Length: 271
Ligand code: KIV
Image (cartoon, rainbow, N blue to C red; front, side, top):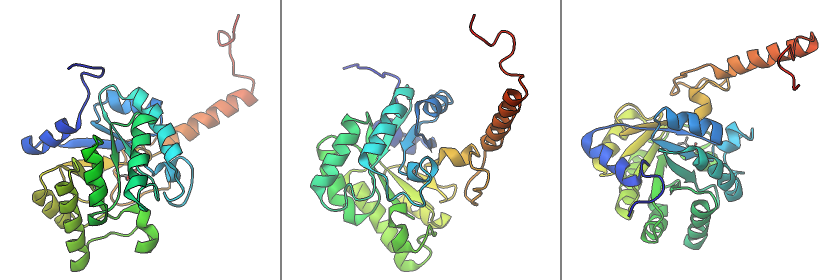
């Protein structure tokens, strides 16, 4: 059966990438304009991450983000994603209390947000939910390591997996996710050697952020890779543009032109 979006990247496409050794390119997106640009540039996966709470809303953590907010941003991103696979994050407390909660929240993101899969944080503790979602036709991306929804448990956004018990728990969690049917797993903020071990241990692609070169793909927060916040310079980010500085310069030039009566000029008004 052929349907809309014939050129779309599917979960099966992403899984196959691992066997052929082709890297997966992912970044976050929160609106149609940047989704279109990333999609045209050939980004494979657009993640409507709950980082939107931090980079779009200006909150200190991802915890306040709601299912309604993810659905709203995801709908916009989906309109700009002709080719890229669109993943919606299940926000904090939309799935932790019960499997039923998780199923309903994931269903809403697929139905109202036009997501093509959902992502959730955690290992063994969410494996039953992953199994249930996959059984009812909702593809799931897992997320282990420094899972930001547990920031208060971790005492900050700190690298996880440096100690033997932590590393064992993260590896066990990744295995449990793959066994439960997750089609890929985000590995966040962990030693590169652990990410490499997990990547070898699971049959599905790993997508790293602050987890070294040996993952099957990489993901970055859009604002970080574009330099939208010039003051945020963590070690794991490579900035491919300085759009923050450029935008500030453009706003200042516009303000100066308006104040000096240089804008609008001849030809820049309606006749
Ligand atoms: O919410 C998000 O943007 C994420 C990425 C950092 C992987 O989970």
